[in-house]
Image (cartoon, rainbow, N blue to C red; front, side):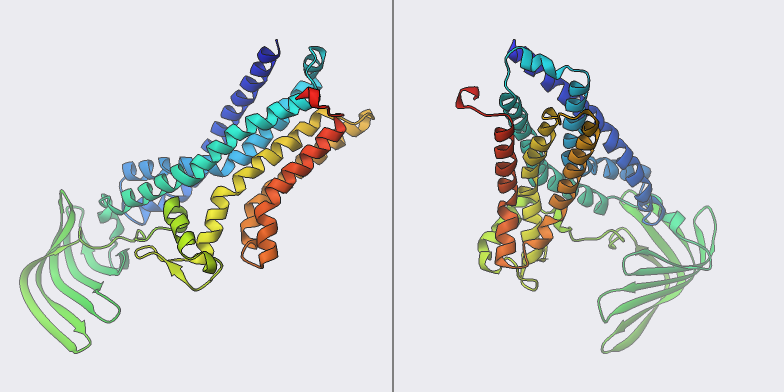
Amino acid sequence: MNKLIFRKLSLDILAFFLLSSIAFSLIIWVIQGVNLLDIVTEKGHAISVYFIYSLLNIPKIFSKILIFTYFLTLFVVLTRYESNNEILVFWTVGIKKISFINFIAKLSFFFVLIQLSLNLLIVPYTQDLSQKYLRNSSMEFFPKLLEEKKFSNVRQNLTIFIDGYSKNGDLKGIYIKEKINKTDNKIIIASKGKLLKEENGFKFKLIDGKITNIVNKGNFNIGFKETVYELSKLNSKTRQLNKIDEVESLFLISCLEKYIQSRKDDQKKCGTENQFKLKDIYQETFKRIVNPIYIIVLSLISSLIILKPKVDFMQNYYKFFLFTLGFVIILFSELSYKFITLTFYFELIFLILPLISIFIFYIYLILKTRFRISYL
């Protein structure tokens, strides 16, 4: 009987969690999708590239809202059980309050594992994959980035000016400036040309013009009757290096192991291709590993709903207080990583604070439920 009751409670929690997670994720995904439209409008990528790129952001969205959604789920489901007197069924069949709380705490471990899997494996992988996909995607809408009588920064280190541009790709009065490195530039001027599309991207076919190479040692010009300027080989506006949240967890952990004594250093960096400050690596690792533990803290706070005040008019204020407390803890958990690089004492406190919080809330619940060993 007890197993059936707890199974129903588990199904109710999981069902509400899935529905609310899908709803919140879709809302955020749509809002974020509007902000990502510059992939098409400014960077010239195809709609299919935009759609796949935005889809790969869903794991990150789900990971960000998981802790709040789980707390909201527990709070709503337990409040509904308490308001409809369904909670009395547990006490009627002999289930002790501490056993009920233990069940909620054990269930929260499942969500901690989900959050850890997302933080350590899935989100970094999908974020890295989405950025690689965007970098390697062709610019299907490149022609739409070109405007007549206007300088267009269509790609990184590339400026193009077109005096005239027809729909069939014919060009006139073409000016192209390519930044080779910090000191060297290439300028191409042509009287006319044509924009051609190939399998690997676009290219300019230029007629009657000259190429000016500007280097440290001086300038030199080359005239041409006809030449081709490849666009597919140039870097796009898409950033080439990963952000720290797109880096695999093993890289971050190996950096910390190697430079554990310098983990708070704001100048020293780790890695060859991805140069990240050790301080940022330490904070990112903290967010991925330590923050999920607060899910257990929030589950214990939600469990306080079953310990309703004896005075009826205080019950609504009591629930409001619990929800506010949970919301504050969520905000605190999201910001706590900023404090671990201050002093050793702050670092120690914020590293063990989730465990201390679990211990304090659990002891409080034990005292309030008149715990006995036989209840376990």
